[in-house]
Length: 76
Image 1 (cartoon, one colour):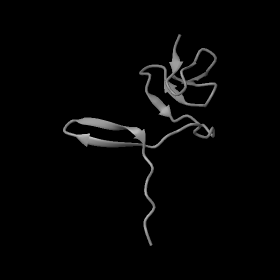
Image 2 (image 1 turned 90 degrees about the vertical axis):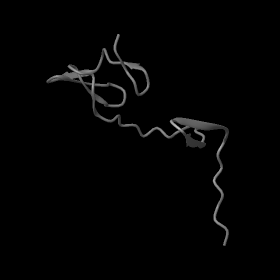
Image 3 (image 1 turned 90 degrees about the horizontal axis):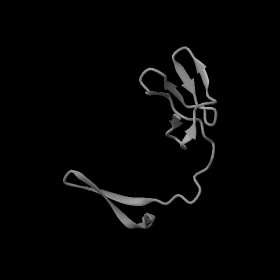
Image 4 (image 1 turned 135 degrees about the vertical axis):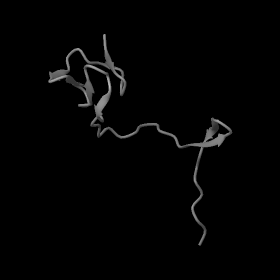
């Protein structure tokens, strides 16, 4: 069964129009021919338990810190 990559929800109940399908959960639209994302999902759900993680590019790799990143406020 095809699923929306946004939240891994099934698309079998999605609305089909022209050569597209709309995710019934967050209204993302995909091409039925190529699978390409045509319209981003609509989601007003706040990020719960999100953490800011510091990342650096070293050579051709992205390296993530293990600890949450807490930005410092500028001093006056």
